[in-house]
Image (cartoon, rainbow, N blue to C red; front, side, top):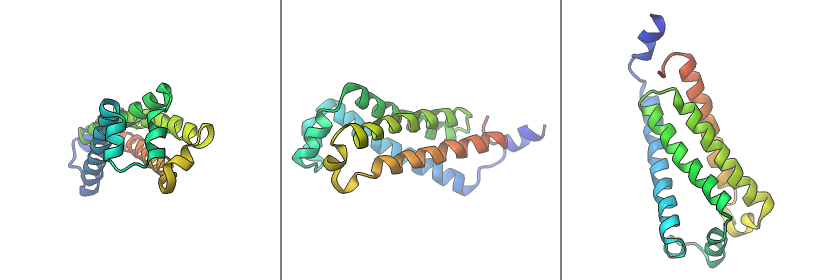
Amino acid sequence: MHMSVRAHSRAPWYFTFSAWAFLLWSALAAFDDTMGWLMRDAYFKASGMSPAQVNYFSTLPLVVKLASTVSIWSGMAGAVALLTRRRMASIMFAIAALGTAVFTGYTWFLSAGIAAMGMLWFMPAVIGGVTIVLAVYAVRLAGRGFLR
């Protein structure tokens, strides 16, 4: 009984704020990912990428592109799961972190991605770190009975 009471309690403002903020972030990433798949070079150029960046992102191996896409859309699913207070949020964020790890590993260690990304070379790790924190947060919320 105690768990169900807490599971149905009102969400604190910081939970709601963080879940909506991550959903917005994920929606922007999903838009970017979709446009990258549909328009490729034209979208990359229009978004302000340098010729080296356009070339780099246009020639990523399919498995790396798919890992990035899985990461983005799993992160979005995790944000929706948080907002709807579902336990699957932690699984979705873990999948997103794994996809980001594949992309980051390729970018940093198996290609010239650091040079191509320029000043933003560290962003895949930041995104992966935030996603891991969200996965841990969701596990803790589930453990406290806040997620169903």
